[in-house]
Length: 182
Image (spheres, rainbow, N blue to C red):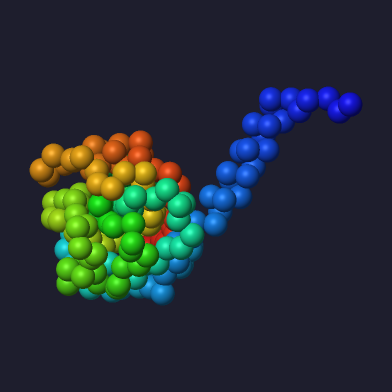
């Protein structure tokens, strides 16, 4: 007779299976690439920067089966604020969506029902890269597969509240981290 598997062994096996599945959820882009410098079209037009302020094209695949909606965030953890800088938050993206066109924020071609949150520049929608002169900053674009169809948010929520609500409802996430310096 074989001994019964140890609970720790089962937990490790389950964790490895979950991690393997999480790797299947992917974020890709025809506009930006992992570790690559953002081009001028994705740079903010203001704050001493001159750019196209276009949101990048993004596509995602292999979301968990239990996904009920998506949220997209673009965040600069290197901003000299003590709390980073939110460049873009889009919530309530329907589960049927799997991509956003380049410039979707600026020309309003987001999937129906999607809601853009006010960025840290103070306007709704995408705000491009604009680090202080001579600094290299990271821009982390993350797609979050959520287990709820919509996030229950007040009108004009803070990015901290949106981040919290995304965090507690995320099933899995996938990222692309680009950089920018001028």
